[in-house]
Length: 273
Image 1 (cartoon, rainbow, N blue to C red):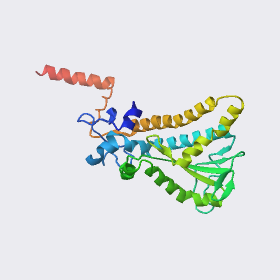
Image 2 (image 1 turned 90 degrees about the vertical axis):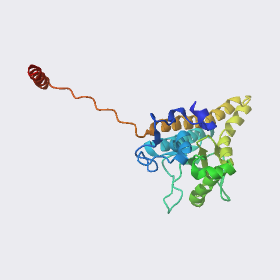
Image 3 (image 1 turned 180 degrees about the horizontal axis):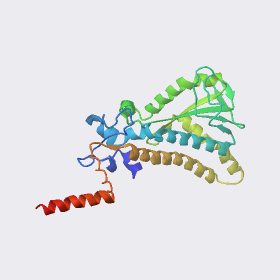
Image 4 (image 1 turned 180 degrees about the vertical axis):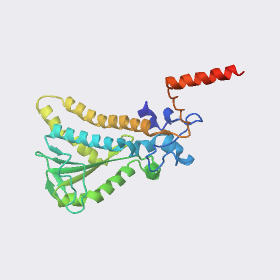
């Protein structure tokens, strides 16, 4: 249900605002819209009711965990389909001087990629996620649905490409939107090409290629599943009710002596009447 509502731009029922459920802010640790700085009315629909703010908010670790899961899925798939060495912790520098890091290094034994004009067997990737419907991206996305992806890819190239080429590595930015878009085009083509050798081997063995095609579909579907599950969880976790009165504390249990004293006071009061 969340997937269809979110992609169709229908306000999420769980975030409906009313006098009884005045959801209007993010988590108290959010630096943008904590309870004491609620969403402005002009942006309430976009940021809150449609859930766009919560899908990208860094509070609670939801965003970084989703990013890491997507990176790991790509690395595991590349290793399974191509036999490459996938590194997620070591050798992630994209520069020898600036201390910049990318997300994964894929070292191939059976394919060549290009770092500038130099052929290499090492591809570095950096995954980023964006919501094209946030106010900061909305005007660009309204002109061209792919423009926000291309803009983010240019930012990543400016940050990492020159350094990776200097290290003799190719670099590829992979941008995933909260709606499930993947780009730029070169990145989608690269991810699809991870299955090329498996497809050729299956057909050479007399198969139709259907099994490989199914794994490729499952791979892209898995990215969508991760997005839906983690973004829904972030929305449920971060949306904070504002101005709802706190429930009264439970009464403290009285000791036997205190109960007896209260009974004596009540008896004396009754006798004096």
